[in-house]
Amino acid sequence: MLMASEARFRQLADSMPHIVWTADAEGQIDHFNDRWYEFTGHSRDSQTLPTWESILHPDDVSRSRETWAEGVESGAPHSIEYRLWDGRWHRWRWFMGRAVAIRDGADRIVKWFGTCTDIDDRKQMEEDLLRVNQDLEQFAFSASHDLQEPLRTVKVYSELLAQRYGDGFDEDARQCVQYLQSGASRMETLLRDLLTYTQLMKLDMPTETADANEALQAALANLAGAIAQSGGTIDSGPLPSVRVHGTHLQQLFQNLIGNAIKYRRPERVPSITVRAERENGQWVFAVSDNGIGIAPEYKETVFVIFKRLHGSDQYSGSGIGLAICQRIVERYRGRIWVESEPGLGSTFRWTLPA
Ligand code: ADP
Image 1 (cartoon, rainbow, N blue to C red):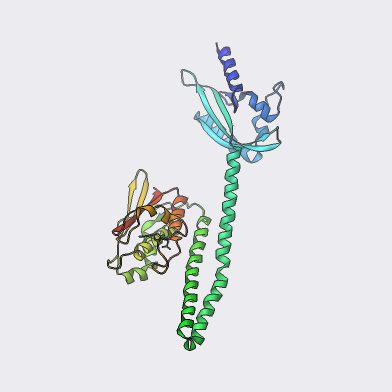
Image 2: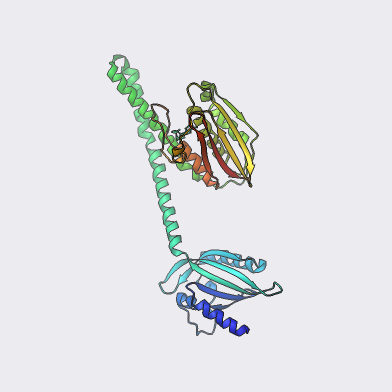
């Protein structure tokens, strides 16, 4: 009976497109299907079974050993990604290895059953994407960094021009210099924000928590001038400590509160609230304002880099602030979104792990 079911299993395993193997309760491999022999180039007739490690990439050996040993010890199903040597094409290929324990009526493990699924195309694509992203990031960083120097020259000399010769200028010339200066200032903001955006990912994941109350106070200190000028008020509830870089938290508050002040209605004094609530194992932060609001069709596009809903003659800015916020939040696997009533105000919410 056992022999017959074993033979049936082997037949089934040989018909599968995946590499399939079995091991005894102690974890010793006792069978590989046909795909394994085709892939490795080993012969089934050989006296000894080829070892797993003989075709495992050296960099993946210790990780695989640990996962396998832990799995055999705990009896829990487990999976791991590793590279195996393709004996047909003489190259490494990425696989997803999975193993599950088969138990008898008394819940004792009698066998291990495993599969290896070829994920090489997906892995290759992920690596290409990562490389392209890194190149783009490096390009954006170098461009925004190196463009600051010539921009400084434009700024300094347009100021000198106005100071030294401004008295002799007619209205037309004065206007030209003014355009030059405001263009240079806008470019300065743009480059500064772009540089911040490209620098965000440089920090490793934090090992300690940061107090959101402190981050908020630091943001408010930097915005003190704009807040005082607007006559606005900020009402904040108690905020938690979260495992996020303090500078990232501060950037979030600064961009969102800065926007809440900037996009106010001229006839209304800004009233801003900052809150955090715990929900389903995470913190949901919220910054609400009573400003101009955002039309429903722009609720997602406002987070796109360089996307602005107004010209710089109406409101100054680079269109990078919300993209920075989104990048920070997503880095910690959170989500950011906006709810708004045009004309009444907006609430930006974001989640962070508790
Ligand atoms: P910037 O403020 O530099 O233009 P952001 O990325 O911070 O760039 O914001 C993108 C756009 O979203 C802004 O141009 C503005 O139109 C809109 N926006 C952002 N915050 C608010 C807000 N609190 N109220 C209304 N509109 C906002």
